[in-house]
Image (cartoon, rainbow, N blue to C red; front, side, top):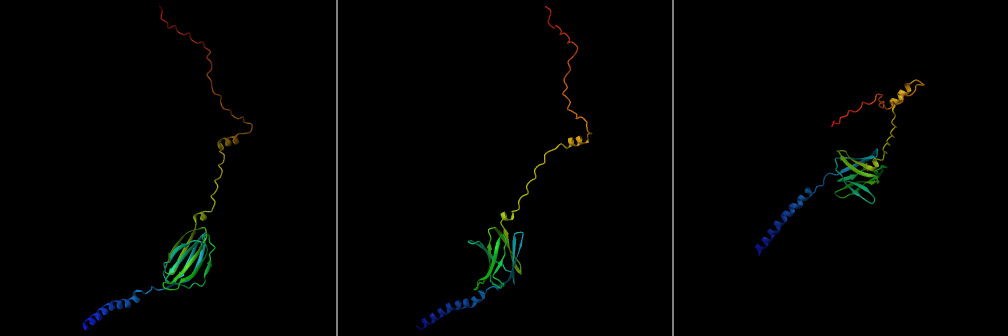
Length: 203
């Protein structure tokens, strides 16, 4: 009986050691990456192309996706906190009317979110980043960018015979115009036609 209890104790102890080791290593393995910050947002619009600069305190690689009804472009910064001083920024661009920034998720992983309220003329976007900022470039649709009317081709000027006009101007007044020469016809011959030789054979 004593041996049985001792064996059960050793068996339970053997099972508890791996669980204890795993629990001890979990906090180290689950350590979250450092949290970054969105510090400021500015925008510029040049010839219909909208460039929005999000200033950050470190290199960030945001995720983007589209939402409809209404049409929006969402830019998520994972492991980041929002420290921008405002919540909305009017854009008044062909591709987007405004942007909104907020702390979308406060628990791990923290997510700071920038949302663009798109216009109908939105075409595409591009994301570039460096150690201090993330740039979001919005392009209008091709049909909106190509609204400039094509130049109407000039009507072809009527062809004029400049050589004849110039020669006419150089002639003195009263000079009769030279008419085209008549087609020459062969003159009738005054000599009588020679008699035809009698080529018939004498019988």
